[in-house]
Length: 152
Length: 304
Image (cartoon, rainbow over all chains, first blue to last red; front, side):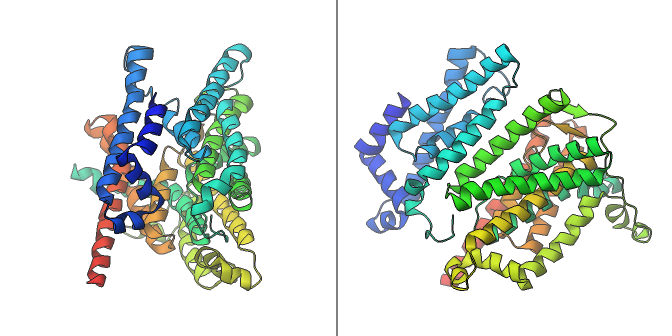
């Protein structure tokens, strides 16, 4: 639902359009008269709100209590970052990528219970997959960054 | 509370905290000057720390431990270069992947090789003995700080002027700077920027490996999961703040190392442990904001 919201917001509302414009070319946005700083702050606030929902879901839906470190230990934030970067920030692909990473981590926990393999192997698997996939999607990601000439 | 800072043993403990940050930051500086946005210093440090324990445990001497740490760091640097420089993977993605890889591999091998979870401590791990410098240790204030430290600290100290001169005068150092500032000029001169970036990453790996060795076989004689504990990130901030220049880096690393050491001492005051954990990062944030504000003011001053 959050992904759908992000999609609708980004592409079908005025504010989302302004924000995307700001992201693609801040200079153009400023020239056209968009309040760049305010847009940035509002976007940060919005993303913070959505991220905060993770905590709410964890407490209300899963654990029914607050456990110290419950959000940091499974590396939700880092996994989220790479899940998004890996699919080039295309909104509809993010849930798929997120699901994939969640599946790998859950599977690793299961593997630890069943076969005694340390669950950190999931991190290794994820990292290797990310490294290889990142090399091939880089064309789309770096198209608007860098001078294509040694700078990465 | 002032006694905490005035206590000479506080000053003597600062180098232990400064060394990993400084070494990692120097490595990161090389990458930064070469045009590689390397924020995987945390992973590099962690791998170095683990490899150091591996080497020291199985060989019985810390020097082999330092060597294995540097080799492991260099190997990780090659991996980074392969996916970032050669295959064009986005720097941030590759860096985060390397951090995850380091965390996963070290914890995994901790269990697989030593058959323990959480921490590995064994009397067979050979740590660095303190090196006493006979004349320097008699110097009134700086004596206890400069003498009696482990080898990586002295190597780190020497690395600062060395890197400064290296980047300013040595052919490879100049090529590294060219790769970062103007790769087309470098290519026009017949040198491949990618190759130079690979070398920078390898050097970064070696430096970070040594920093990791300081963490695991100099300060203590064990390995804990996630031992680097954020020091790699502090080093990243230091690199970005100083834009990879060795001498400013040294002073920033000194500051952050001092705050890091202070945060441990302040624990005795009765503050919640979470507050003291926050301290190095708070200091980092303050310096970051202050410097950005100061730079923005300078820029505005120049424009008007």
